[in-house]
Image (cartoon, rainbow, N blue to C red):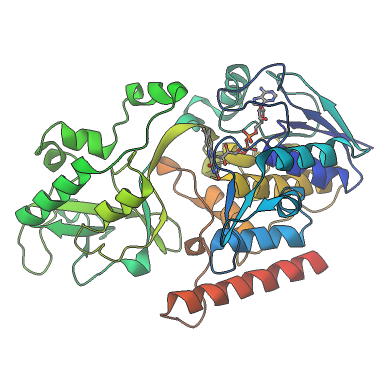
Length: 432
Ligand code: FAD
C-alpha cells in the first residue's frame, strides 16, 4: 500500500494524481499555492489556465484534437472537466476557466485516495514521486532538480526556432548540403538573391512581436537573441550570422547565393526540420508570413512556431525514458511542461502517462510505452529521442507520427487517416 507523491497540482499533476487515485493508489499531492504564488497564477485552484482559456482544436483533423480524443479514451480528468464546462469557440475546446479549475480541483481533491498538502517542496520526498511543477518551478526545487540532472540539463527559458514539415519544403528551390561539404549533406538550404534578401529583411524587421511579460525580461540578457533583434542591429549582421552563404554554393551551378537559410533535421524519422538560428519572438501570424518569404518555404507548414519565454524544462532526451521515468532513479517520474512538452493539453497528457506508470511501478507491473502511432506515444518518443544538443519543447503535431504506409498527397485526407490509425491504436492499448 505505497503512497506516490505528486508535486504540483497544475495540468499535469492533477491528471497524474487522478490516474493514480483511480487505480487505488494513495496520493500525496503537494501544491504550494496559495501559500506561495507563481508569477503567472492568480488563484489557489488546481489546473489554473494561466493565459488563454482555449485548449485548442477539438476536431480529428488536428493533432491536438486527436490527443484529446486519446485522453478521453483513457478517462482524463482534465479533458472530461473541460468538456463539462466548454464555451462556444468554433472548432476549439475553450472553457470557462474558473469553472474548469473548480471542477478539476473538486474531482481530484475529493477523491478518497488523495491527500492535498499546501506547501512548497524544495527537496525531494522519499519514495515514488512525480515532479509536475511546470514552467515556473520555484528556485529551491529547480536547484534540487539541477543537482539531480546535472547543471547543463536544466533550462530556464525556451528560445525555440520554428519547425517545419519536411514534405512542405519545395526541394526544387532548396538543396541538401553541409557547409564546405563537410560530412554528409545534412542541411536543407534555402538560397536567396540580394533582392529576395531585401524583401525578407523588410518583412522580418517590420513584423509584430509578442510583448514580454515582466518576469520574462531577463531572457535576452542570457545571451540568446531573437532573429528579428539581430536583424535590427544592421542589414549585414545576419549575413555574418545564421544566414551566412559561404561554403553553401549551389551543388549544381556552383554559384554562391547572397544569403542562405538553413534547416536542420529535427526528429529521427526526418519528417520535421527546424530553421537554424531563427529563435524568434514574432507573433504567429506575422511569423508565418515571414517564413513563407523564404525561397523554398512558400508553402511551409509550420508545426511549431518559434517562441521565447520563461520555461523550466529538463533535457529529456538525456535524462528521461519514454515512460516519463527518470533514467537514474526508477521511482522518480517527471510530467508536464517540465519534460519539454508544450501546451495545456500536452502537459496534462504527460501527467496521464506518468500517473499510469507510477501506479504500475508501485503495483510491480510492467511500465507502459504507448504505441508510436498515437499522439501520446509519439510525444513521449519525441521528447526522449530528439537531438539532446538542440532540445526545445514540442507541441502535439502530425509530423511526430510515423508516416502512413501509403503516401497520401492530400493533407486533410492524410491527417484523417493518421487520426483513425491513432485512435485504433489507443483503443487496442486500452483493451489490453
Ligand atoms: P502548471 O500548470 O504551471 O502546474 C505546476 C504547478 O506546480 C503549479 O500549480 C505551481 O503552483 C506548482 N509548483 C511549482 N513549484 C512548486 C514547488 N516547488 N512546490 C510545490 N508546488 C509547486 N499553454 C497553452 O496551451 N496555452 C496558453 O495560452 C499558454 N500560456 C502560457 C502562459 C505562460 C505565462 C506560461 C508560463 C505558460 C503558458 N502555457 C500555455 C504553457 C503551459 O501549457 C502551461 O504553463 C501549463 O500550465 C503547464 O502545465 P504543468 O502542469 O506542466 O504546469
